Length: 439
Image (cartoon, rainbow, N blue to C red; front, side, top):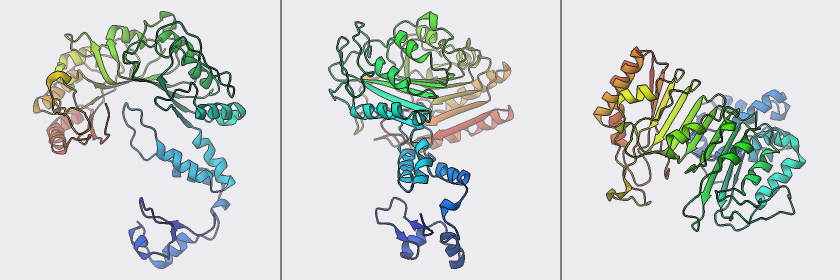
């Protein structure tokens, strides 16, 4: 790292050049309006960057590795930009390596290759060995995401010479990943400071009918993690009965579940696992029975502050009175959010887009829905509920879909509701995302 600053155009594939070397690139820079003297001083400081105090260097590295992507609500989206920036900085010099390494290990993601028949993946073995030999790196990890494929039969057992403590157990239970829990448990044993854990289970074609997730194993593995604050479970299709002995025993306060497909009473029992549940996110959910389409009942959750609903039975089928009785009656619920698009019956013969997804109408973007929201807000205010913010997500740019005009029209419909909520001391937030292939 010297005094010379090399400039690259946005997404440019051309080699880097000094600022004097390419007037066209210079013209694209945000500081192209600077005078030559000001630009020269900015690009030729009288000191090397490594001469700065380490506190400032650490802040510079952290800012360079900041994740500029908007957080995706309820989705498992790897934040690759942060990893690549930290990896690049770690190769500059020893000082940057020392400062960037904790950022590299702060968020670990282990994604298995689909259809790979090996029981244990080489990348996971290397990760395990590194964390085992360098506890200081393991202590940097605050976020861990694991994706496991259901390729092993329950009675199979395998062992790795490189990491003998990570092995498939001999399991007689016919539930998914009865064996995989040993992999999860041995990995977590090395990471005492994990605050956010994501587990996603996927299935190979030969296992088209997934079994039930063993909640007994899940509780046994995760309950001892006292630093855990957030749990994310993907493909939570079905689960065994929640063991009541674990009620109120977990330390995490936030839970995110994707693809919940079960009776809500059983599901609500699972939500009693944490001692203090404050934030719940449900994505791609559908609760039984089909003929009882009404809001999930969270009124008994005394500490719940935020509820995000990305469900198939959405607000178009819920009355304002039911929402206030079942959801907004939770005494501390300050924020309610939902997905603005509703999934419809797949057997209705809908036209498919070029990605194989049905063209889904936005059933929640009609004038009566704005009236519905106004009714909810009025009832919540009359009942002195704790509600202070409502957030709605719109996805007008999915693959094969063009709904920008429809989404913008819906935003205009919500303007009067936004003013009404402001007068009541509430806030309405509408955001549009362009995340393709969400289902």
